[in-house]
Amino acid sequence: MQITTLIPALILLVTQSKTAFGDVFTAMADMEGLIATEFELVKHLDTYIQEEEKRMKQLRGILEEYESMYQEAIADVPKYLANPVNAYLLVKRLTSDWKKVEGVISKNAGSAYIQNITQHRSLLRFPNEEDLNGAAVALMRLQDTYKLDTHALAEGKLLGGKKYSRHLTAGDCWELGRQSYNNGDHYHTVLWMVEALNKFEDESNKTVAREDILDYLAFSTYKQGNLKEALQMTNELLKIVPYHQRALGNKRHYEKLLRQLGVTERRGEIGDEDNIDMSEPFDTTKLKLTKPPGTTEHWDVYEQLCRGEKLMDPKLEGRLRCRYVTNNVPYFYIQPIKMEEALLKPRIVVYHDIISDEEIETIKRLAQPRFERATVQKKESGEREFSRYRIAKSAWLKHEEHDYVSDINFRVGDITGLDMATSEDLQVCNYGIGGHYEPHYDYARKGEVQQDFGWGGRIATWLFYMSDVEAGGATVFPKLNLSLWPQKGSAAFWFNLYPNGEGNEMTQHAGCPVLTGSKWVANYWIHERGQEFRRPCGTKSDFEM
Ligand SMILES: *[C@@H]1O[C@H](CO)[C@@H](O)[C@H](O)[C@H]1NC(C)=O
Ligand SMILES: *[C@@H]1O[C@H](CO)[C@@H](O)[C@H](O)[C@H]1NC(C)=O
Ligand SMILES: *[C@@H]1O[C@H](CO)[C@@H](O)[C@H](O)[C@H]1NC(C)=O
Image (cartoon, rainbow, N blue to C red; front, side, top):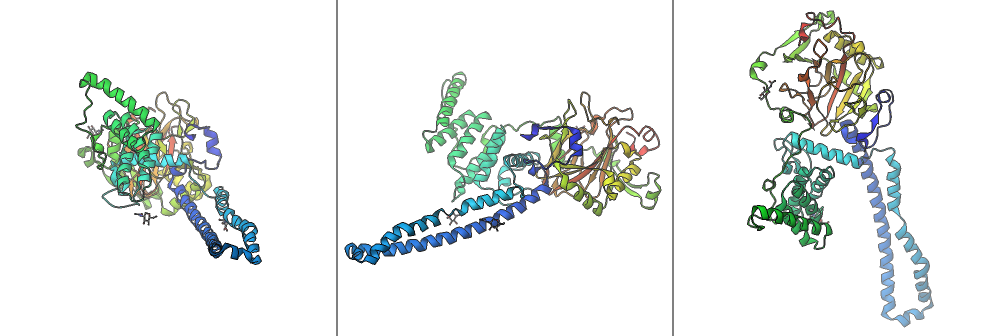
């Protein structure tokens, strides 16, 4: 699995290696390529079916001919065979004619089709098992973060009952459950297997076998701590497949555990008074289920902020202002910039209409061909690695590459008053289905190592929003109760370090999972060196912390 593959930082920065497999799901831009793949498959499959239909028609013609001659022959066999022409034709039919039939039957259009697709594999983008798993995990993440009901989600309803997609079949739900199971996530396995079971009952054309649902459901139900229900589900499975070896073993195991529990708790009785009715639609509220824990502190706040819940103190919010600023840059006297305060302490600001659509499109176009799965730096060594906690595609652009990149580089320097010579290149990111960046700090915290450019730490972060996001995708600061919503053309800016160079813990932030749409951002991480005379007290009071 590539999650653990380490790519030395330098190589990552200078090479443009081919996008590895297993990461298609990370960016909406790549997902679009899959639509083209599907188009090709549909086209080829259509050709294949037409050819097969032609072949079947040919075989049916031969069959009819054989049949009529056979009927003629058995009407009076001796008379039929007395005719030497008939005798000859019978022999011919069973030798050379039959060879032709065999030829038609074994003319393997199927393997030609498969071969055709295989040849196309190098040209088309095909997702693999890892992509499937990634996409399933992304869906679970959305389900948790945005508190989406499993059933509603399976019906294709995301928010406010609006239907966004096709509904999932029992087989689709089963596959999602299976992916969760493979990840050791029994909580979501139960949710999706229950959904599969309920859908199964309503399906006239079954998309999965009931025993296959029960097999996963029973075990994950047990793993979530519902022993009695797990036993019942296992019994249900054994009604369908009486000699299911694993189920028999599990049944013995559950019964033993129940007896042990019963001895201490209920004097041996295994009651069936509150048994679940397996013929009714199943309700997960009858089970004790434990959601997997969040991966960082303040996880609840993070998810609340992602959902747009207002947590900020209204008094603090009331003090925030919007205004036009010039930062003493002559150019901005002509065209002042729109600045909105998002927070005063630490100071976080959002600039509006700071990058044009044309600049955005150019940057996207430059970045997309070199997208790689975004990496994070290993805390201990600073090496770059793939991680579940950052799911996106990214590419780095140097300011020399295009006038527009250089323009915006200067613009950021002018607005912030910081020396952009010690900024990392522009990092362009695209977040696809459930793409996100879990709560993190942009600066290296104690004991952590970041790639050392000899420029000191990441003093400040500048984050361009290059798209609107239909739903989800906020930038949130869990320790500050702050959510920033992406707005195409705007940018957020804050200092990560105090003037004395120490990291400000409050700047911990995250990119919430994208629920619908596609999120494009680009950021500069600006470093300390060169800022010694640019961020002393006073001159740029806008950014005092
Ligand atoms: C294979 O692909 C080519 C080019 O796309 C197409 O013309 C041909 O019909 C395909 N053959 C089969 C058997 O699908
Ligand atoms: C089930 O399959 C049959 C035969 O393939 C088809 O005629 C019918 O329309 C299908 N029913 C549903 C609900 O999809
Ligand atoms: C964030 O909100 C919570 C709950 O409303 C509150 O207890 C906490 O003090 C707030 N934190 C900040 C930094 O405003």
